[in-house]
Length: 316
Image (cartoon, rainbow, N blue to C red; front, side, top):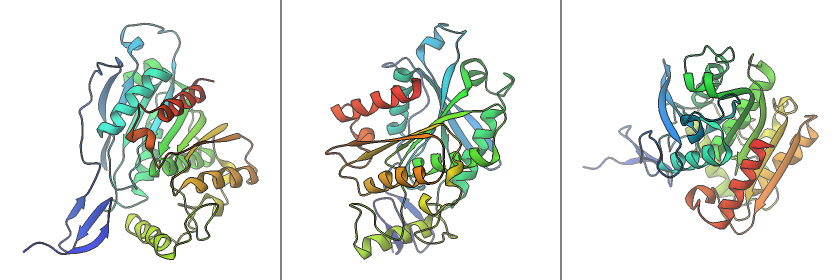
């Protein structure tokens, strides 16, 4: 007899009464490799043994050929999306996207395969990502455990980026950088693509449907059993007194016109400006597109434009 469903969080996952978890998306993986199209090399490293999780590193082709060795490259630390519960750093979606970013922007990339809910609920993902940032900072003297970072990454030009839930993580890592600091590591900018933020009161064009809003809260309670409701600073930066201490010089927020989270991106700009933070924030809205369209259809004209804006931000 088939197990009965205990909780249905489609399109992400289902939890069964016998404890089984069925992920409905984001389960495909590809190995690290030398990418034929971009020439970017990637490899997986063990980011932590206890708890156990990995990270995938990307190195542009010019570095493999021995070019421009005197000048180090910006380092992009990327946090994948997927509602904190699906997708991985080895997902073909993210692997292909970060090959393109590393190639077009000329950056070293660290993509973190953080632990996921519900087996490892938040703050596990935040803790894992902070651990990797500390590991990255340990390379500041050029004697860290990973040679690609020692030789090629400029730790005074570090960027954090993510999409959806990954953008939420990037934001929280920026807050922690602002408060805890990491010697030898300077975060210049943060990129939030279609960030997953929420709140008890609808903003802008956000849905007012009580059922849909309640679903988001229920979903977050699955992701984090200690979740404190729709205005928990975990998902509502406007309710976070630490916001003015965001530890970077500039922020780029991407939003999409048809995305249900669109207005939260604009609201983030509003509350960040009011927080006393002294940096520069810009919101770029893509007309006619939905949530993470640039990952689903990376060759479309709007995705190409988004990539150009990202590359400019990482190199200006």
